[in-house]
Amino acid sequence: MAKAKSAFVCNECGADYAKWQGQCQACGAWNSLQEFKVSSAKTSARVAATQEAGRKGYAGANTGIQDLSEVDLGDMPRFSSGASEFDRVLGGGLVPGGVVLIGGHPGAGKSTLLLQTMCWLAQQQSALYVTGEESLQQVAMRAHRLGLPTKNLKMLSETSVEGILAVAEQEKPRVMVIDSIQVMHLDGIESAPGSVSQVRESAAVLTRFAKQTQTTVLLVGHVTKDGTLAGPKVLEHMVDCSVLLEGAEDSRFRTLRGMKNRFGAINELGVFAMLENGLKEVKNPSSIFLNRSNHPAAGSLVMVVWEGTRPLLVELQALVDDSALGNPRRVTVGFDHNRLSMLLAVLHKHGGLMTADQDVYLNVVGGVKVLETSADLAAIAAVVSSFRDQVLPHDLVVLGEVGLSGEIRPVPSGQERISEAAKHGFKRAVVPKGNCPKKPIEGMTVVGVERLSEALEAIFG
Image 1 (tube, rainbow, N blue to C red):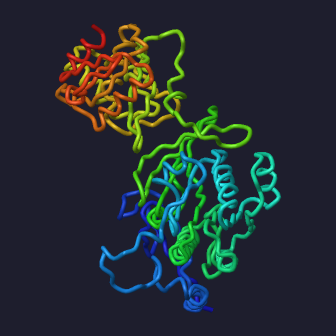
Image 2 (image 1 turned 135 degrees about the vertical axis):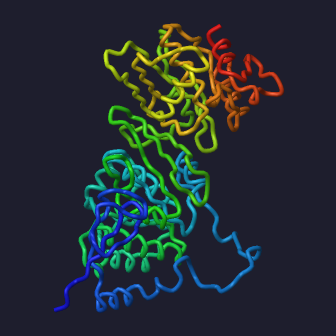
Image 3 (image 1 turned 60 degrees about the horizontal axis):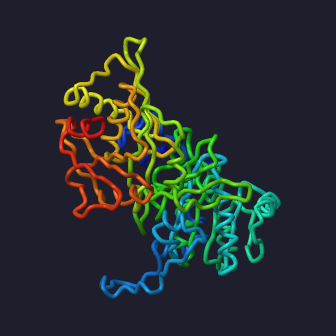
């Protein structure tokens, strides 16, 4: 009997090696190589026979060479998922033939969101929900508890990809959910479900099916302890859209963030509230992140960040205290730790405030993660406010990028950010001079600054 061959594949980048080694030479990750069995010739032939149609054109029917201007877009209209916040993250709705990967921590609400979406879609078109982790009774109990319309939604409890495709070819659903990709398996792959080879090949076969039949496929993916999607990195490269459902354990709010999107903007943010009857959309996210205390405190300040295609007002809190350690602490939640250290150095050099003997804590309220530089000036202002124990006005909003030489740089979409703050009742704004509106905004005083010293003078007087 021939000995089964093994290969070692990196979970981070998908590179493969003939033998195990501690570090992946392609991406530099440590301890990321996992072993999987290479299919034999007979097994490969069996897999090829079951996927003969799938091997004829990965991205759809083979129509030969076409001029780009002659490609017809009329046969691929988007359709709504039933939730405007979900549609926003997807770039305007679901696309026929698109493959969407939805990740999130256990209990975040992935299955709840998809069950709500599929129950709504089933009333307008054919829909198939494939569950491999829960029984049909468990899914039905959840739907009954949430008060969802259960008629017309086809359910299938299956983990074999070949079996799922056989049913899908017969039912011809327009939308199909796979919950989850980590428990799916192909009969021709000699490894356990959830392994690198099974996840990669199962996702490839399902993607082929989606492209060739114009079926929208929604894949549920598990996440690792650090919050990234589990499985090989090539899984994210295969799909058209990758979104992550996040939420703190002590919060009823959930954020759906787009990590990759071939059909729209990335880093788009959708906000939901987890209630007894399921996930409900939050039409005005700024209202929940601006639920501030009635008693003003030093170190609290409002900033405007840009999430995808819309501005979002969030509260930033800082706490500066005398350090009892030789190496003062720098702790951030929702803000880049290294950027805070850089801003403190700029504050010392160009603002005249030294925090080398102070512990500095920075927190973005509401679980929002700030991934842009427009929060630089607000972070410095919050630190100075806490250090001086000086309360800032409740109707003040601050935005701007701070350079290493102490200059205040303009930020993208500055006009829209200021207008959003004015809509929420803010009366005063300190912004980069390049972002000052050409026409005065009714009820708001906008102060443009070019240097950090000017900004601190405008904020604190």
